[in-house]
Length: 148
Image (tube, rainbow, N blue to C red):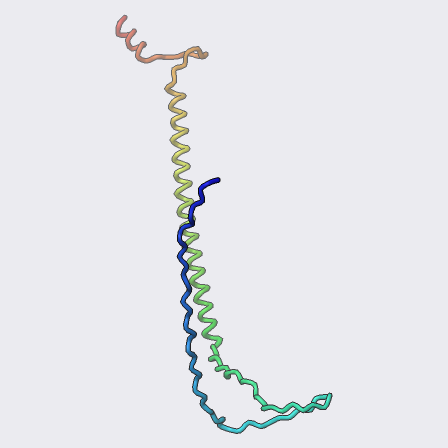
């Protein structure tokens, strides 16, 4: 048959047990209530009696009254806010009108430049085969001086 190999030595580790934590009980301190509460007993409908101490519900902290604000102070504050809003609106309106005026001025200038350029092109453009009489001043002066 075949050759059987011997298994490698297996090393076994044993876990170390943990020591339980030592719990020391807290010392009991008897606290005497400032006043002995009253004991209440209640008889249930089936005849059983339940006895216990009556616990008064915790009272919330009393609310501190807010100081009153006079109507005059409120009116003055609202008037100041309204005045600032109106001043801000007028400032924005003035700025808008100034910007609009500058835009219109630039548009008028642009239109004048374009229209003036168009007129200059129309006047200075050579008219080749159009009807009418074309007078060329340079040729006329040249011919007059040449023949005269």
